Length: 469
Image (cartoon, rainbow, N blue to C red; front, top):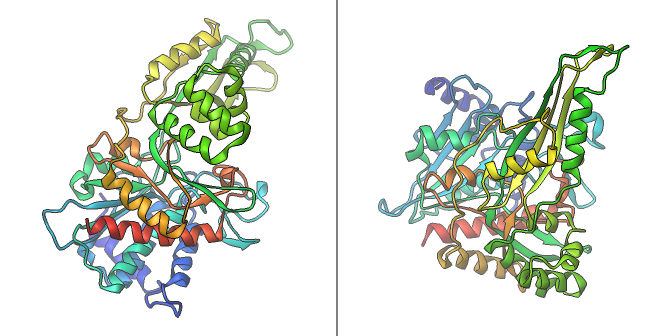
């Protein structure tokens, strides 16, 4: 661990430039926007970013709001100086009441300026949207968590339960050190809680920007990478051979591209399609109801497969994400490799998927392996009334008539590390995105401005309710 005294000195230095005093607006919205902007404009990509700097800046904000040094802990895992994070605590009045943990990762997916319409690391407000890398995934929620702690202290709120905040790094990159996992292994007591709240299934907006439903993470897929690799003796390119490593590889990858895993509906997906069938109606709603009755209904599946998110909720998916091959322009390739990223539905093992991929490759020259396994697979946390009641109450106050719908998250979150460690973790954001998901992980990521501010109100009230249970 990096010296605590050095890190606290950094926090003190950063706090001298933080915005300590409340702004003129009644609920500190301008200050929140400044926190959001600071997080967005702190590059936290794996290649060139610095999560430790982002954590230090957020600690400075909290220190300026009156949090003492002993309630702020910057952690930096050995050998990873730029992959640190922050733990902060607002103490409750009842020591025997278990805490609530607000969890967020501050790292973001890579973004190349030359590919984007706007600078991906500058927060830009335009046409009713915030644009930048991380606006939706997930610096809005991270900024809200920091803002929550400031507002609670500022208002004199003394919760019954302790409220904890953990900002971590490494969620977006398989193979990188994951801060949430590291905390479960090295600082489990520091994050101990009855349950945690983090990113999950966002709310959905219709084409006019009206909220349709608020999604809650009921289960999530496991993200697992597989490697397809072909090795070969190679040779001179002037004497080509049929036995070419690239040809073996591309044929195998093409077979993966044309395969659909069978429909596999768990409780979360059944609940989602049952609930949404009544909301959406029409042919799509009828298809949802039909696939719940009979997952093998090919006609209904074909209708749902046209929408990428529904397609992903129906089954395990695998897709090629990276290719590398060859060592010289004038030589036959000696090695060709592809990364296949799979999102696996609950109840299916990593090995089952590997065997299916090997079957699809259908070529003894193609080795199909699992390069890394990230943690055990645990069942999702149960959506009890103790958890769902406050969500439905606050959602009903802010978005009357908008249903709360549990769902399977096609991606994966840090819940995959906290659930096995005995901290039930729920994905709830109060953020609404367009049908395209806000281009998360893609070009020109965006989120409606109103969605961010409404989500801020929702999460402030929700955590306050949980804290006084």
